[in-house]
Image (cartoon, rainbow, N blue to C red; front, side, top):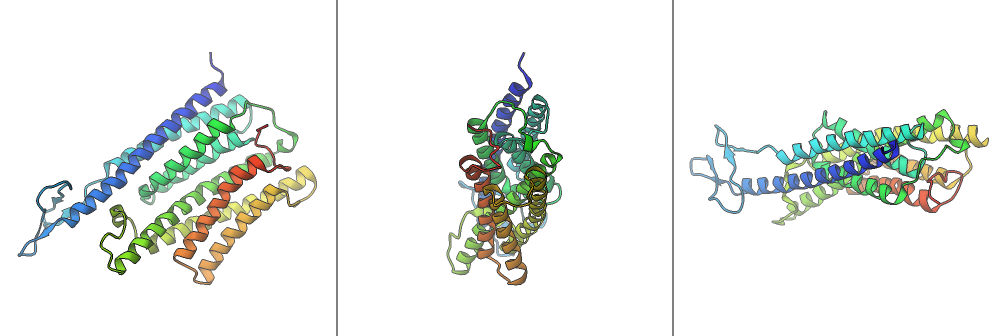
Length: 327
């Protein structure tokens, strides 16, 4: 009979496969959005002012409502992608819980477990946000990011269940790491929105220049640059608050474990660098009016630093925080 850790591994790979299916569904959704926009562009305006579909061709013909206006078809693939994300998250949660039960503690004491929990919260933040704001156009970014991070962790970072080292035997392990993971999940959405903002900004700029093919057609179904930037900023602010708590909690934990609040350990330093980048982004946008493309790039740089801290720093830099579990 397989043990709990074996069950965790099996359900984790199942979750990865389902997330990959969600990525494909969301990709098809973007393609469908493009074809819908192209179909709208093929609508003919009749002499009496009514709108009629152009002759059938390789672009789907849109339906018309009672007023003769084109009806934008529902994006079925987006709903399928979201359903797969929910299913994948349930398998993901099962993998995380069974790993914790196998270890007899919270499942985020090494790099493999932190990757499991961190990506679990990224998906959870995305799904909860969908109940309030339609961000399904970010599905390809979120599902793709989770597949890459989770797949890399399962392939390269897996370690067997081991007892906690002494510095981790603290209630701060639960608080500090969980809040850090939640912050990463929120900042991931801000990152994805900034990427979309750059694409939308380029499209709007090319339209202003009179370029006929201004960019991918699906961008016409997305909010404008200002809306995307405002959403990214709001998520970044919330993520920054949680990251600030992470920094403070880490300092308190360091005092409890090593007798000092700050020691310029490499992990501590990179956590502070990330805090400075996001503080600079929020300050520049709020007080200096540094908006648009520069604002988006600074937000993206901040999340790139988060990923660097999660991967390169944890794997290749040794210090007091060297809890990757890798030999």
